[in-house]
Amino acid sequence: MRILSPSMVFRSPSLAPFRSAVNTRRERSVHPPLPSPHRSAKREPFARLFIQSLWPNTTAPIVGGRKTMAGGFSVPDGGKEYPGKMTLFVFLACLVASSGGLIFGYDIGISGGVTSMDPFLLKFFPDVYHEEKLQKSTSQYCKFNSQLLTTFTSSLYLAALVASFFASTVTRLLGRKPSMFCGGLVFLAGSVINGAAKDVAMLIIGRIFLGIGIGFASQSVPLYLSEMAPARLRGMLNIGFQQMITVGILIANIINYGTAKIEGGWGWRVSLGLGAVPAIIMTAGSLLLPDTPNSLIERGHTDEAKSMLCRIRGTEDVQAEFVDLVAASEASKAVKHPWSTLRQRSYRPQLVMSLLIPAFQQLTGINVINFYAPVLFKTIGFGSEASLMSAVIIGFFKVASCLISIFVVDKLGRRPLLIEGGLQMIFFQVVVGILIGIKFGSDGVGTISKPYAIGVVSCICFFVSAFDWSWGPLGWLVPSEIYPLEVRSAGQSITVSVNMLFTFIVAQTFLPMLCHFKFGLFFFFAACETIMTVYVTLFLPETKNIPIEEMDRIWKKHWYWSRFVTDVPGGDHEMTKPKSSV
Ligand code: BGC
Image 1 (cartoon, rainbow, N blue to C red):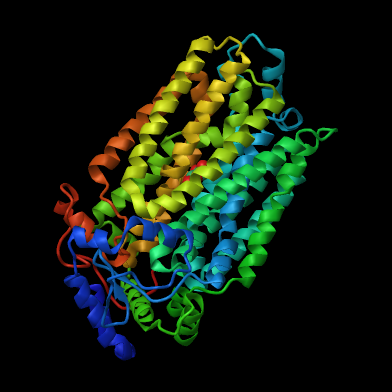
Image 2: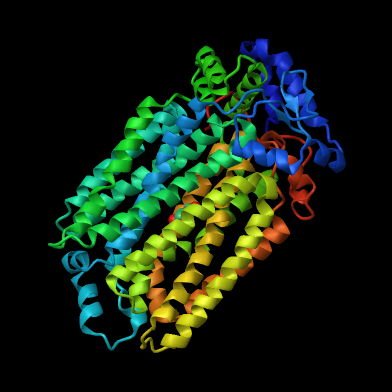
């Protein structure tokens, strides 16, 4: 088995012009400058970081930063900062690209709302409707328990799971933009089919289209955002995807609230059909978007890539970053089999994280609230309008909480947010379980007073807030920043597919589980949250401020993961001739 480290890739004659600068970069990685924590704190006061995050156009290099030989600035944590700023061009590009999150969120909010609308239930799921209306005396917990209804919601996530693998090929061979374009177009078709649906089959076919669109969007948009963003704002811009998901959910909840009032019972068609709007924004937007320099280099357009880099960084001084991008791209191409490489022992920490973090993210039970909040509220006795209004209130909490995360994630760090969010979710999940248990017991019969209902909705708001400033955004951010480049894209596909798989499982099993576990279901999710909070405390090293290319340091220093990580970059990986692996 041939052993080759990524830097050996640079023996290729075509890379001669870059070689000396790249060597400088590699040497610095082996002996990174590590100033004392004291000096770091002095150089990088919190106030300054805060100001930079509020006004990202602050272009001055970090105080005390040392100019590196390749032209970047070394920063206190041992990495480096490239010259440049967040230009309006990048901001607008990222805003347009984030509309991929909008279609994702819009669908989550819409499907939750329409499944609580009587005309929709009557047309497609008459059994559920009659169960709800005619048999008031039966257990509240079971009245929405229909396999067909859950299939309507969850079919989308199976489609997204499969599509994310195809999307990975389109993204690699043709670039990020075509992937977003395909995603937008297929989502558009799905919205039209759903808005015009005549029977359940049409409804589910429409959802499969929507799922394919979402699969393409969640593969390409986070990648696009990360590649366009200046390194020091990567966390912030990456969370833009989650922010747009929450905005999409809120808009959908508001639309459902309005369309439910439409006389004639066809409001649900407007809700489903309006998915075409974010889809058109994404499809048209993707045509206007610039290609990322990384993708251009990957496809052999190096000159174009360099001009694009100058344009998006707002400076001509991009040589250091350009050299590193070429290096990273070549190292990435040199891994022939990213999927089998990923199974090597030295990638075990990252692999375990990208299997567990998205699975845990879904086992918080967040999508129970996202998909079924209105149904859940009707279950505990709210009227139709009150259920939809409660979903709107929750939507506001989600948007505000994600915004908080954007501003604190690079200062407080990932671990504190995940641990605090986990504890807060456990507490409010348990309280909701107790409140529902007291009122409905295990036979599921009872009524709820207004103040009591307000108490339940408030607890749910605190629960979703905790999710949307912790496990929501970080469930995407952390897995995307821990992989070395040569397997990063394969890792991202695993994250997306595990996320979609668990979303599917939770969506598919929630209503039957509510029927069988009753209020105990909330304790089940609280138990999962306890396990994941303990897991993060023990096993997740802090990734804040660690440059991606130097992320292997965190595993080497970790009490448990250090046993898996060797000192040889690339370890026992088989590498052969360059071949694209994104
Ligand atoms: C999760 C989704 C969830 C959304 C909104 C995302 O991070 O992956 O499953 O629906 O947040 O809460």
